[in-house]
Image (cartoon, rainbow, N blue to C red):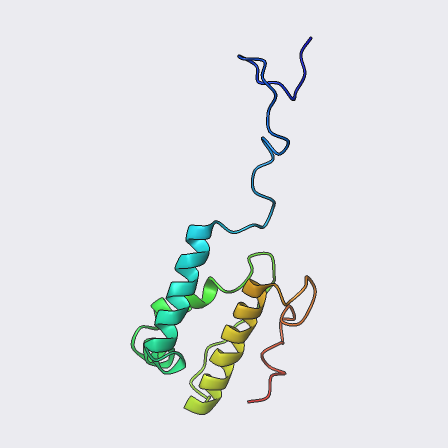
Length: 125
């Protein structure tokens, strides 16, 4: 007589939630704490102005950071030009960060805002 609710060696009953693990999409507490600390450091360290300086001084690093915000399953068209003013760049970076924070916090449902290829083009600057 074998039951899946019994430990194989001792035959004792397992707790009711044994073996269920973390639910899909649940974030590890350490990862969540690190992300929160990084966002706080970003805000204290200059925020958007720091990103603008990084974009000008180290465009490859900036592009690498930016690529981590783009979902891998979404087809994205990106064109980098120097035709934007600093204010327009600042507004676009703020929009990207807001969208990333909203996704992180669960405010953007699948297929919601921010999934279009032209979502930034339509953003008022």
